[in-house]
Image (cartoon, rainbow, N blue to C red; front, side):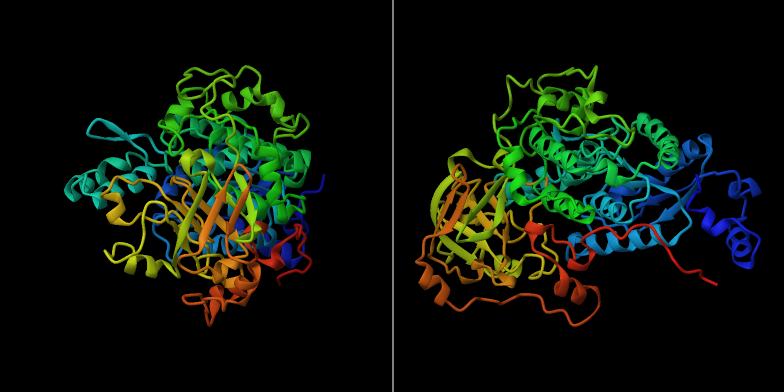
Length: 568
């Protein structure tokens, strides 16, 4: 078998000399001879991505495994996106990170890649890149942090930020106590310990078959993560020798398995846009409706924040993702393989539930139907999504008067005004926050509630937006409304006072205004992005809508790993 890296290193001419000589900084001659696969470690470690700051240690274990299996490991730092710090939103750069990683994988003399991610956008961007280049690849998720406690109670990072901050605004928690909890929330290295987007995408990577089975959800400080990282390094060499590529692993059946998993674990709505984008890179026929079709009727089995009460290290000790999938094994595609080359379902043999308060039995679910619901109607002709598991059951059918905000800044300016005409039956509408409008589709759809309603004890309201929300968030929030307002969607024509009708069982979201009257209205475009230069301009001009994964239109489809021309 000819290795791809040999196209750089084999031969006796000037170019092969240059390629070898500049890499001879401790590598012996045999590193370039005898069919040793060169394995890149696409590493998103960064001090400014705090959830990924430990990945250099993980990378070292991967390197050890690659060496042991007869390969040559090569650390490749790639774009890292930290959800907590990056402004205006990390989602603005997911496609940039994917594109940059894709080009570096294609351009360099490597035969395979291990993808190290953790924080929300890192695993999706790495999978999009790997799908586009289609070199042998697998994911090592960085793992969740350990549970912190405050006043004797466990803290779910993200989820409890939203909860506690609302209690401050309601006057039931002092600001001093709120700030005291800050040092307790982030107990260790690792990403969010709720079933937020980071944990969800680690589970999605495993359900897609792209991790060493049993890795997703291993806590970041747990020594077993380093053991599995070592094993992943060895497996990367085997993948190259077997010629097993992401396109062979991530089939349509694998994506349907991921949708089943998303429902069973109560995963983040952000997984919808990420899975659609990854599938688009592979040419897999996956649509928004597949999430409803396949996820409908799948029970919620994991009692984890934000849909439940436990946290990720509880899930790990209770049996982990394998124990969850064992309960819904009959719903999984039996032919979809993992990176091991064996069907994913074969790796579920022997999985056990060790704590039924964390992982429920199929016969006793937390919710009988927990899939992401896809809504359509005259307010979302391209579709919108809602997470019923995180919503208030009594609000899943609701009619209320719209209170419209044209931007995040508009929310901050008016939400707590005593003059705001709003009550608990109102529907808060936020527009101008989709892929084009913000730009980048930020996690702002779970609007805070008006303080005068919080003071009355209100803790949830129907909210509708073209934005996303954090996977750690909760509430009756209609998200990803497509087309967005900035792309001419109906949200741009909604006015305060319009009746909004939500009917999740019927999969509808409508504004009760005659079609002719709605069409005759001038769309409101205040606050929409109009960048003049750089990445933001490229993004706004080429980003697709949420129902297609919010990828760039010219990046859809695989580019392959071929590099035609020499560099010297």
